[in-house]
Image (cartoon, one colour):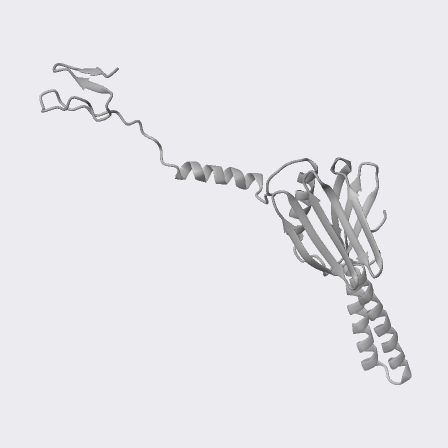
Length: 224
């Protein structure tokens, strides 16, 4: 699973989704990853880090899946808080160098656990091809704030690979059924309008209002 860059991206500069393309830019310090998926043009991934630049082109027909995975381990946060509390209790309970030494050890373990908690909160955007080749974009926990937007971004990439035009939709099938039912309820029913003919005893025009019938003195006859 080769990474586009070994440096995790810490910020999302742009995510744009249109009817034909999906475009995203992720950045970190001296690092940048640009992803552009356009219908009938494949997927282009450009990356730069210091003096290193890489460009990767992916054929839509070889794209098997796009995966976004985000994980965290709360156990590290719990351990960090626990050892911090133990250190404070040890200082209050013990006196002399032993209490200070216990506090330093607990603080060290607490800081290491806190570091591991933030370090393991990584995300990964993976492009898997039909030949089992993967291209991964590493993302820090601070890079993606809107997971729903990332889902729409992935959905549009898959639509482009399948040659499906149009905007992505976040409306669920159940919501579509409700919308169709509401449209039917709000649509006024159409009534059949019958032509109105004047009475023969009245002063009548030669043609009816719709111009399709003519009065010959005794009855209405269709106009050819």
